[in-house]
Image 1: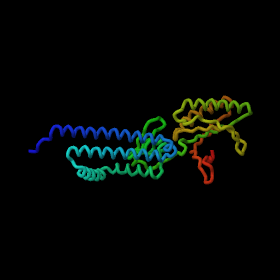
Image 2: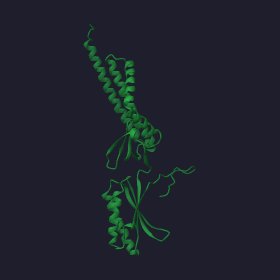
Image 3: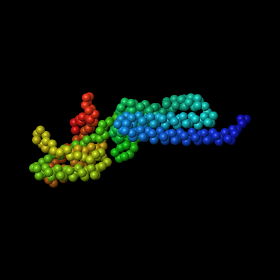
Image 4: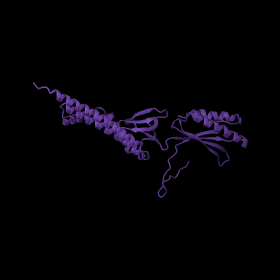
Length: 288
């Protein structure tokens, strides 16, 4: 019969196991805290790719630390690290065949990062969900939508990625100006008050306060007032419904001939400024 281990030896192993668990827990917290500081740093803010790679690196390091910690704990129970690594390889291979979705998540996540499809901080549309990328992990890509909710998207479901370079969609409302200068001034005042009320009513979908760009005239002589909104992608309903209807009804009080077709709402994705070779560090703005 195998002799029992001395009581002092058992106590020592328990202390070692607790020390390993506590040490790994502290190291994991330290790594995550360090990752958050790196992602919030000036360099990471300037280069969005750094934030994405940092997010993925933290996930990989944390996984590796837990994996090693389990091996060290098992060693205290008399299981060799060689046997642990061999069994982990065999189990991993079996799980890989049985869980192809997990493998697809990892491969797709790496593809998303290193193919520049999207970075942390980008406004994107993925798998039917629109939001700002908060994290690209080993298994999930995490978005924050316009309601502030976190959306976890399995990487294997990412087939198409729509990236909004400026982080919004630009909605442009062109409002026809009719009548003499007095009526035109009344129309501008009405539109201005409706625009302000719209921003107060729908702050969740309007990323920045709307701006009134001023009066414009076409080559045919038609004059209109242009209003610019910057909104969350796919959230133009309140403008197409409430804003446009309110403008038309309000302007009919000034001129009864006013009709729906006199308020035109269009959408476009505003591109980022580009820097050309030989120019200064300041960007050259594209068409506004």
